[in-house]
Structure formats: C-alpha cells, structure tokens
Image 1 (cartoon, rainbow, N blue to C red):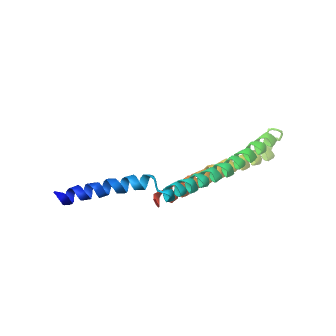
Image 2 (tube, rainbow, N blue to C red):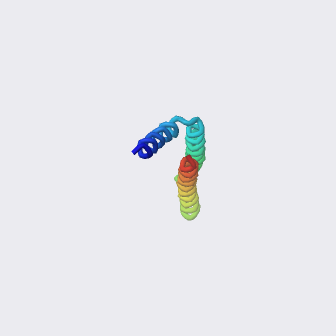
Image 3 (cartoon, rainbow, N blue to C red):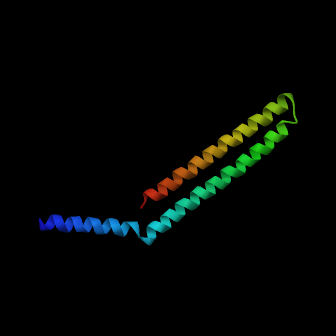
Length: 96
C-alpha cells in the first residue's frame, strides 16, 4: 500500500513539474517560432501569387494560362511550406 501511495505521489509530482519546466516553455516558444516563420513564408508566396494573378488578368491566351499556372504553383508551394512548418513544430513539441 505504501509503495502505491509513494508511486502515485511521485507521478503527481512529476506531472506538475512537467507543466512548469522552463525547458518546456522554451520548446513551446521554439515551436511557435517555427510555425510563425512558416506562416510568414507562406504568406509571402501567396502575396506573390496574387500579384501574378493580377498580371494574368491583363494578359490573354497562353501567357494568361501560364501566369495562372504559375500562381497556382506558388499557392501550392505556400500550402506545402505551411504544412512543413506545422509538422516541424509538432516534432519539436513532441520532444518534451
């Protein structure tokens, strides 16, 4: 009985300590920074795609189609960049 009580107390103490470790806060901050950087890069790519789309509106034929395809490619790259940053941030947080 005493072993069970000591084990339960140790588990409770460890779980409380894990919530307030400065190292955990640093890991969370690092993960947040990775996510924010990924979002900034993705936003920049989306802004470029919007600019290319705006130019495409002034074009016709094959030039317009190529510009629209380029914009779509940039948007796909932006999505991939954001997903990669989220995955990296999740991996960082799993190290806790």
